[in-house]
Image 1 (spheres, rainbow, N blue to C red):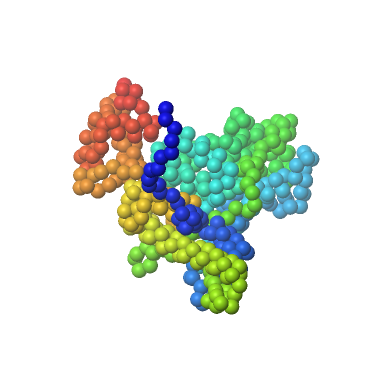
Image 2 (image 1 turned 90 degrees about the vertical axis):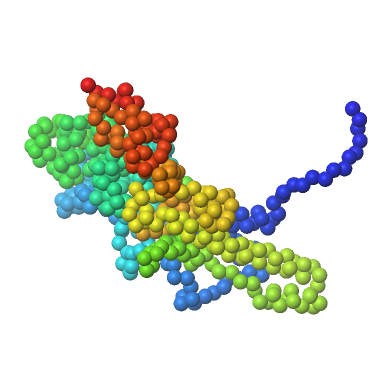
Length: 488
C-alpha cells in the first residue's frame, strides 16, 4: 500500500448561517417568534421597537391566551349546588360534599376574546383548543388504539383537544354535532370511546356522568353507589342520608358504605396530569375568515413586536471616518444580523400566507360544510400550488394554528390522503373508508359483500380502487372478512 498526498475537487452543499436562520425563523410559531424578537431586542443594541398607533396596527386581535384561562365555567348539565349545600357545608363523613361538587363544576379555564365573538365573546365551541398537555397526549395515544375508523379518529382528535385539564367535555353532543356537521350518533360513538379511556371518568359532560363512569369502571352497577350518583347528589351534598335511603330503598348501612366508595372517586380525573413547564399558550398564527363569499387569510402580527433599526446607529455606520475601527466593525456586525433577522421574518410571513392560501383553495368546502368534506391534500400538492419545496410546507405548517370559522385548528389538520374517481378527481381516503364502512353496515348479513363486491360498488359510484386497497382499508376499519361476517 502506497502512502502519499493527493488533491481532488469535490462539490458539497453546506448550509450557510443565513440559510440556517431562514429555516429556524420559518419553523417558529407566533409565541416562539415573539420570544426570539424579545431576545433580539435585548442582545442587539441597533434594534428597537417600531411603535405604531392602534389605528395603524394590524386588525387581527390579540388572542394569546394562557391555557389556565382557556375554558369557561360550568356545563349546562352539571349538578348545581343547592341552597342547603351552601348552608350546611360539611357532613359527618370527613368530606365537604358541597365543595366537592361545586369545585368539580368550576374549571380553571376562561374563554379568550377570539376573532369571531364580537364585543361580548361567548364560550362557543369554535373558540376553544387545548395545548398539547400530558393529558392530551395520553388520550391521543389511546385514541389510535380504539376501534374507530379514520374519520372517527379525526373527530376524536378534535374532541380530545377540547377536553379541559380537569378531564371534562364542556359542550353538549348537539353542539358538537352542529359544529362538525355530523350525526349525533357518530358523536356518541367517539365520546363513548374517549370515556372508556384512562383515567376513568375522563370525557364526561358533567360531574354526575364523571362519577357514574368511575362507578361502572369499578363494577358498581345497579347498587347504592350508582343510585346515589345518578339521582341524589343534591341530597348527598346536604348530608340527607335518611332521605336517600328512603328514596332508593337501601338501608342506612348500605348508604353509608356507598358514600365511603364515592369518596374514593376523583371529581377531576384530568387534574392528575400536570401541565409541564410554565403556562402554555395557544396562539393562532393565522386568521381565516369569509369575506364577500371568499375565504381570506391574515397573519397574526399583533402578538409579535415590530422592529426597526435605531437611527443613531444607522447614522454612525454612515460616518465611517468619524468612528474608530473596532466600534465600526461591532456596529456593522450587529446591523447585518438585525437586517437578516428582519428580512427572514418578512419571508416567514410571505411563506405562511402563501401556504395557507393554497390550503384554502382546496379545503374551503370543509370550512363551509364540515369534516366529511375534508378533501385529500398532501404536502406535495400544497408545495406545487405555493411554488415552494415540500420541506418548506412542512416547516410552515408544523406546530402552527389557524383561527377559522370551525375553530382553532392546527394547519396539519387540513392534510389527508386520496383515491381517484372516474372523472379524474381525488376523493379523500377518509371519505372512501367511510363509504366502505357504510356499505358493510348496509349489507345483507346472510350475503355479506366480498372485497371484490365492494370494489364493484365503488366503481359504480365512480371511485376506482384496487381490491387489495379495499382489504387494507377494511383491516384498518377493523371490519372482518366476508366469510367471518356471514350470519345464517
